[in-house]
Each structure stands twice: as structure tokens, then as C-alpha cells.
Amino acid sequence: MPVTTYEAGATVMDILIASAAVALVGRAVWVVLHSRRGSTVRLFGRIVYHPRLWAAGAACMSFYALLWLGNLTEVTPSTWRTPSRWIGAVLLLAALALLVTQWVLEHRARRRHGRGQQIGP
Image 1 (cartoon, rainbow, N blue to C red):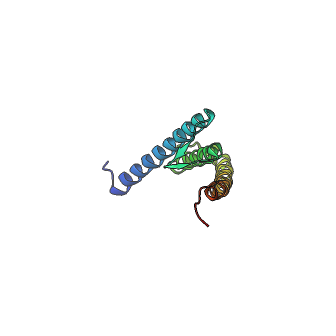
Image 2: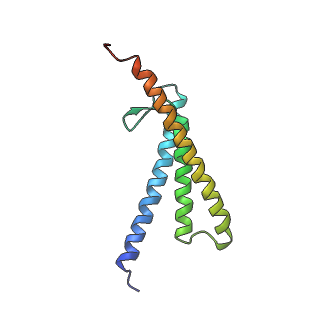
Image 3: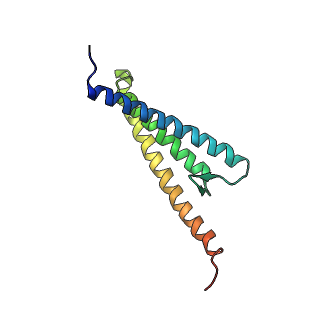
């Protein structure tokens, strides 16, 4: 049975999404481990003042993506579909709440640290 271009493209996208989610979980673990040492944690070239908050939000988002991908590709058994949708909704809301809170706190921390570094009037 030949594979259509659409099926091949969908498979490639599934693999890319799953790889990105696993990589994001790995980055979140790395951030948590480095934040425990007391050293400065940099994420994408910027200092992160609340690294554990970012890591928690990133992990929730990654697990949501993996759960969504499992439902989309019909890997999840049919009896788990409804509970997995509820779990996915909770993970998505938690991720959004954590990441928005982290963004607000980072913005405040950068403003506070930036004022002391300005030279001049």
C-alpha cells in the first residue's frame, strides 16, 4: 500500500512535535539542575531570574503536546480519550498560568536590575 504525500508529511510533523516536546523537557531539567547550584542560569542568551517557574511551565506544555499528539495519532486507547482530554486541558491551563506568571516576574526583575545599571540622568 503506497504512502501518500499527506501521510508522509503528517508523520514528519508528528516526529518533529514529539522531538521538540522531549527536547523542551530535557532543557527544563537542565535549567532546574543548574538553578540548584546557585549559578546564573541563562536561557536563550538571557539571564533567567525565576528558572524553576519557567521549567515547570515548559514541562507542563511539553507533556500537553505529547498527550495531544497521542490523542491525534490514536495511540491512546479509546477508554482513555475523555480523561486524557481533561488532563490535557489542566496541563495547558497550568502551563499558560505558569509561563505568564514567569513572564511578568521576569519583566519586573529586569526593570529593577536595569535601573541600577543606567548611567546618566
